[in-house]
Length: 359
Image 1 (cartoon, one colour):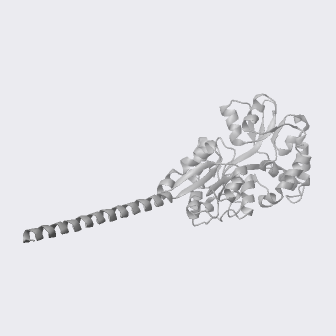
Image 2 (image 1 turned 90 degrees about the vertical axis):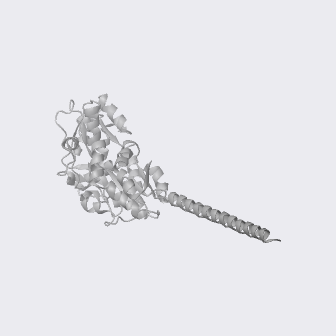
Image 3 (image 1 turned 180 degrees about the vertical axis):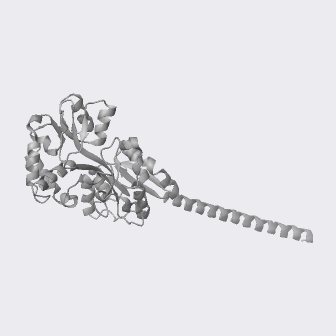
């Protein structure tokens, strides 16, 4: 073979080597790219997501407004799912949600099962700004309150009622509405028991007074819409209702109804916040809880739904505060049972309610 042939062979051999190297480099680059894409996909798949369980409807919409900046600042997606005590129990037990909005009855029952983490003041600094009445335990705190007060038709009840005992007055026989075995009525039983020298642990006098009221009840209310129609149709003269719903019925629905805080105080419609234990992003979930307890979130909820914020730093516009019966000055008049004890006897109380009250 001549030198020209050898040069051509050497050139071809070098070209083949180069082509093989380029192919290998391309393949390596592709593998690196694929790995980075796969890693990015895993990272995105693991992109922080928090599941927040709310009440549904307008309440969840108000929360969504409150957490927009939190999502952006923490590169996290907060998915809000509507829930209730019935379906939240398995969700919490199965650790399917991170933060839950609930009520003291459900929340404290779940806390007894060690379902929630104690809130860390370092991650939830708004804890120190809450009204004392908003703190049920180190795992269960209230973000906002509605006020359960006496509602009445001013066309029929010329002198505003002064006391919860007015619900038992004989002139209102068949003219009273109450809901069933619910937190506000448990609070009322407890208040009556304490007035008579009893307590949650000795509630006989409370059940006896509630039985007197039950004789006046025309309807055991099952919804706010039902409650509204009872006043609209002049079927009742008095009831227990929340300040926000009274304002809605009076101002938006043009129904004759007013509200008054009895001399013994009022009861809270409480929206509690808790962080579920055993989830992958607990620290971030506590930070979300802090946002929900913030003055800003409190103002949004007050503006949209008429609930009073439990954060003392919240400053409500005058027109918003005017629609509420709870104020910074009277919030400490809130009456509450010992709910940690109540949840331990809840089933027994319900059975007694069905025997003695709502038969």
